[in-house]
Image (cartoon, rainbow, N blue to C red; front, side, top):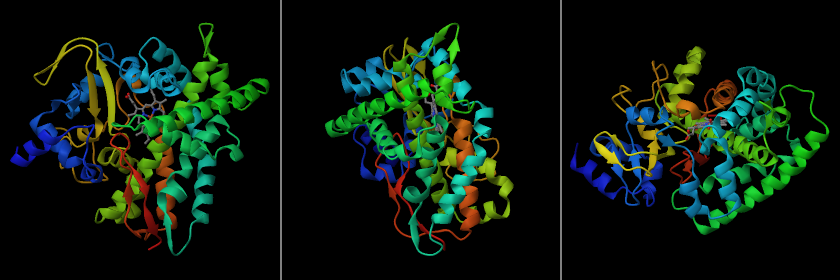
Length: 406
Ligand code: HEM
């Protein structure tokens, strides 16, 4: 523990992060874990950085709630953003969560996901064929961000011509969850929810009128899903669909972008993967650990609890720092090194417990197919300019990653 650790921790306020934090948050996370692994922040919330503490919180949904009514009411008031974020399954507790999770889980079953593979292969080949064989392109705009919109668009059978606004809606709705979101950011998020619901109203009405015979149409499955005589309400359907599109979009884009950047900037990594393609599955887990696309999550303590010697009162907001837990030296040897063959790799990028990411098979399939295809087409891929990072603490990724065939 050094004096610079203490200085970093004293200055740390998740609501007022310096620009340098977004470039590289990991020195701050290490300092927090060493000095104050359960830190009380200026706003009274607690910031957790140890793997063991995150694991404990994830596995105890009775003590640590995902319900966000209390947290979001003062942030969003009575607004479309409040309605959306407090309806989606990720921000609800059992029994509602259990019930909706079953519907969504069924729709994203391994069978449904494996049926996606041929369309995904064709999409990646099409995107790669359109990229310039010489000269620069943007890995995010021209490749990584296109894939999840198409994949989830296909899952819900959104017509191709209507997919244009999806990426912008998703960014605006998720952007409103960042610390220190501005009034303009909230207004954009509210507009995006309204436009998205308007769009889904038409899509769902058309699907009800003409249900798809295709078993892999997730929207028809959600519409028809029934358990103990109950179905998802119209309102539930809108918000779970919006959540599916959002949950799978920026996250997967970030995974592909962060992975490619790590491969291009870690000496020998790209060469190892090219020489041993069977490293790919383990490599995806390592990309998820090394630079997790979702860095922060939240829970509400329902009773007083002591974590790591710190007493946390009931009703406190906890921020679970996945980015820090994934680099905890108590669990990962040489945590700041990218090791494609790391094993075991209990990374927490998909969270844990009852809310573990329902789309993790989809995300892994997309990342595997995209990264393998990219390096097959461009084995000498290289950076072609300064990458720019989104200035976001919760979702970590690049807005632009200029690359060239090399
Ligand atoms: C690399 C990509 C992804 C990452 C890193 C990621 C990460 C996460 C995390 C951390 C959670 C848990 C949040 C919490 O408990 O606080 C979560 C939940 C969820 N994710 Fe993902 N996700 C990814 C891709 C996807 C995709 C592609 C889909 C859908 C096709 C998806 C659907 C969901 C759903 C439905 C939940 C809520 C589960 C529940 O509350 O039971 N995710 N995700």
